[in-house]
Image (cartoon, rainbow, N blue to C red; front, side):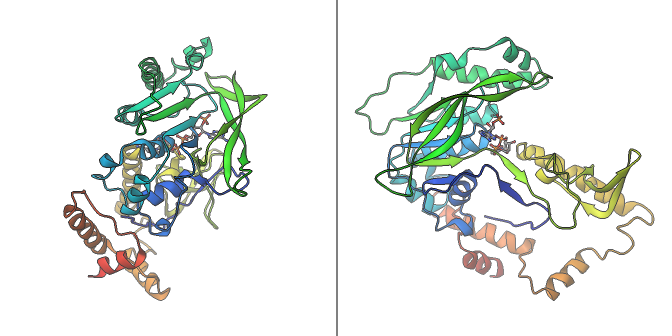
Length: 376
Ligand code: NAP
């Protein structure tokens, strides 16, 4: 189910390459398998070869790799959208390459998500042994504040690589996940047979260069190689974009704030807040963190709002009309809205439909169906 909070959050994918069919952003793919109404007719090319390339080695990259590689018999009992399940049942993708421009010590993964992928039945993990060697700078990096997590990820990857067994050509259902390190995408390759369709990615080998405070960045070596595939998913992170009239820190890609209170300007080291304007989530702190991180972040902003409401003569007490004012404005602008009780009706309907087919929920994937369920 999709609940839209048209607040200040607007996020866009970065990295613009030339457009070839078969190249998608991971966001499009995630929206498709999660039943986003704008993507229910999206048709990723899952049948042109057995290989897909995912650019990036963060949790989104892992999420999409998991969907491509997990047996559909298992996906069938999750809340995946039915149109995605049907397409994946027909998918010929058996090999997925996760491309990282840095090494295993720098992979932007978290342990729980990595374990889930490594635990997929009949999945063979492939990592080049040479990519697993650790430099003194890597050792140093693993001593940083997030050391334990980085070390754990590195250990999990090393263990998975060591446990790798030979694959058999005869086993059609056998799947492979290749972690490819020290490679950055240079350009997409166009198929000779199918004009306008991707046939691979040209990758540049990289090395790491220390830039102080234990951080290492990827630097291209000028050495290139091609990796053939029929589908590419770009999962290289997100970047917030500004909206008119709202302060924005272009360098950090966030709305400047103190505990969620939006800062209008700073002078002489003193920050002046924008009365009655608050921010939370990725727009407040940048595009990182798991769901729990967002919960804590939202609690902090709500805490600030509550303090301002309780304050004598505070901004929330004066000019603002609260929900009454908002509802009036929506009415004036003829905005169709779904309130919480409508959301609860959609939730109940999806769960009831799911219970009939052994799924936690069956998603409604068109705006018409969602609005009909909300107003029933
Ligand atoms: P991310 O964690 O920022 O990872 C982005 C990946 O793309 C990194 O490997 C990064 O490499 C690479 N990258 C960035 N720019 C690149 C470029 N120009 N060329 C090549 N590679 C590039 O982003 P994400 O995976 O989209 O996730 C966003 C946030 O959501 C993360 O905090 C993630 O943990 C969270 N998330 C959580 C869950 C969950 O809780 N289950 C699920 C999905 C996402 P470098 O490190 O070298 O920059």
